[in-house]
Image (tube, rainbow, N blue to C red; front, top):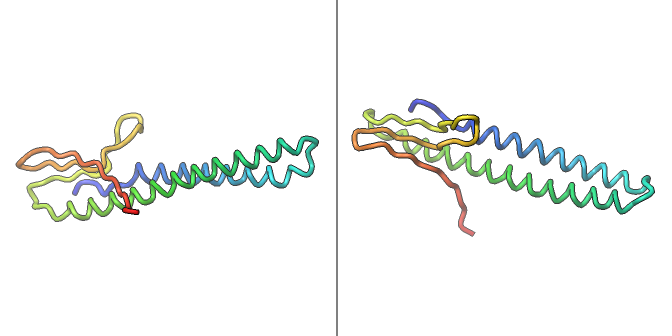
Length: 121
């Protein structure tokens, strides 16, 4: 294995968590500011928008966290390949616009693996 991986997922996890905290803060400001402004509807709207945005960013954070767990599980499974295979995990695309989760190079070809971690509900 040439690279452990997870850096792109870590960036996304941090970004969503930071945005969730920011949106939660906006919602709190809206809650505490509503009684003191002359237009309480504005405070109410700020609170609602903050809460809705918080929920979206929290969902994104959760999805990326679960996705990273799936990437780690697949990387661990691929480690058992024979030594004539090379494994690259979390290959970053130019300009940080995305990544390739796993690239396996071996005697029988080149394989690109995109990992998804879904639970059955």
